[in-house]
Structures are given as structure tokens and as C-alpha cells.
Length: 390
Image (tube, rainbow, N blue to C red; front, side, top):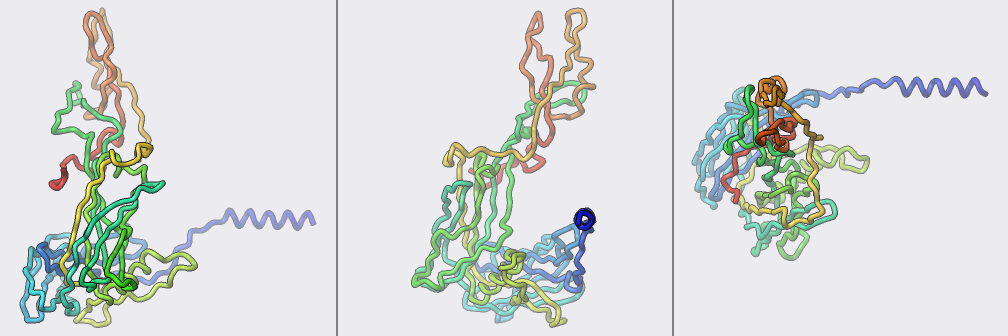
């Protein structure tokens, strides 16, 4: 029995030690599918269409823009509006001043000669956003939207958003070394306060189809954890709202299930994502996307840190520390700075150490330095204040 027990243990230990990475065999046949994002905007704003291609799981890049395409909007009466190629897969046109009584579709000709066409869609009016608010929860903010349609004609909604926030580096660097001496950092070159942004990466949908009134109340948009740098100083969110048809709502619901709700044993099984865009040169070629025709409503709000619980403390994303960089060498009662270049790296970000009294007059004998990650906010943002910031 002892020998059997020993043999079983040996087998188990050997099995645990022999771990081999598993790479599933996934077909790459449909790894270059055209993805079309955007809406034909009937409001007082630009129409922006983004074209990209799907990539395989082993590809290092997650974005593959479709460049050099020809993109046009066409009306049911044959009027054509050409979008400008902005590069990197983005195509745009200014306010189109479309006739809401007509139908419209999108035509795409890619650089390989293939042509794609969306179905004609009737203009769907998007009601205004009533308000953007937030609730304070134990672990952070829950941002939500309120809207309604007094005509009870919308029923199906989608939202996306852009976040912007002001944040600081861990330490403020007021001085910098030019390699031979330490000079004060000029205000135009400050690297302590920055702005950063982020865009929604999930599909946010809402429906009032089961309600008597077309009202959406406190629709969750996003959560911001209490320790996030987004809440360190000031946070802003620009929310865009889209009215959907029932078919479009079903498309986005199916896309959400396929991209965000897979992986668990109780999650829905993958299914085909059928949009309203088709390849006319080869009907068997799959396309991902839905082109709607609607005005886009938007609203921006600001949330100041002073309005949030004082117990919320920002967690800095790097482990930061400081160290002294002494450069004063005394000789015959005088302080010589000739060793500065060897002790402080070229263009390093530095913070002044407390001034030390050196007879016969005060003099700085050293500085406290830190890493770029901890003293330069521009590695994660920009010092340029957005035009909308107030």
C-alpha cells in the first residue's frame, strides 16, 4: 500500500509539473472582416464613419484601420454626399443638412475594389438628454443618464461617452538639470498638472418598450472607482445618445452578448451578428456594423473632487520614492558645484531639497530627485487644457 501511495503521489507531482501552453486552432478565414462604425447624422453636427478590420487573436495590434476607402452618403432621391478621408480609417463630412422625409444609406468602396452598401434607413429622431447625474456608492461613482420622449416614439436607446479628467504627477518638479547646472523649470514647461481622456469600450443600451411611458430613468453608463485618478481633481464626461429602431436594438444586443457576455457556463452562446451592411461585390463576404440615420444628442457634466467624500484617496499607479542628489563639495570653506554633472543625470526631473545654511550665507547643497513616471505627468497625458474645460 505504501508503494502504491508513493506511486500515486509521484504521478500527481509529475502531472502538476508538466504544464504545456495550449494554443487553440482557430480558423483565420474570417479574420479580415470589415467593421463599420458611426451614424449618418441628420443634426447640426458632423457625420463620422470609422472603418477597420478584425484581427486574429495572435495579432499584437487590436486595431487595423481600413484606409484609402471612398465613403459616400446617398439619399433615396439620388443625392450623394462624399465624406473626407481623415486618415487612420476615419471618414467625415460636416453638417449635411439632410431632408428628414427621405431615406439614406452608406456606400463604401475599399482600396481592394470591394463595394459595400447599407440598407436604406428612415430618419429616426433622438430626443434630448434630460440630465446626466451620479450616485455615490461604497466603492466609487455610478454615472447615469435620464431621458424621455413625450411622443412615446423612441423606446430604444444607445449611449456612448468620452471621459476627460485633470490629474497630477506624484511630485512637483520645479527645477531641471541641463547637464551643467540646475535651472528653474519655466511655467510653459511644467509637468505636474495634466489632462487625460478615455472612451467608452462597452455597449450601453436601454429600452422603455415594456413601459407605458417612454422614460429612461437613471440608466447606468459607467462606474468610476473611488481610488481612480479620474476623481483626483476634476472629472468630466460627454455623453452621446442615439435613438434606435427595434432591428438596430436587436443588432446591438446581439453584439453585446457576443463581445461582453461570453466565457461563463451560463452566458449566451456565440451567434451570427447580422447588421444592415452588405458586400455587393460578393454577397457571401461578412460585414460587421449597423448604419443608422439620426440626430445625435449630447450633454457634458463636470464633477469636482470637492463634491466627493473626503475619505476617498487617489491611488497613484506607480511606486514612487525620492532620493537626495548632493552636489556641493566643500574646499577651504567654499561650496564648489563642479561635481553636479556626475550626480544628476542630464535633463532629469528634480525637486529641491530643504535649503541648508552654509556660512556665510544660505545655499542649496542638494536636490531631491525622482523617476520620470513619478514627476512628469506628460507620460500619461497632456498639459494642454481642452477647449471645453472650465
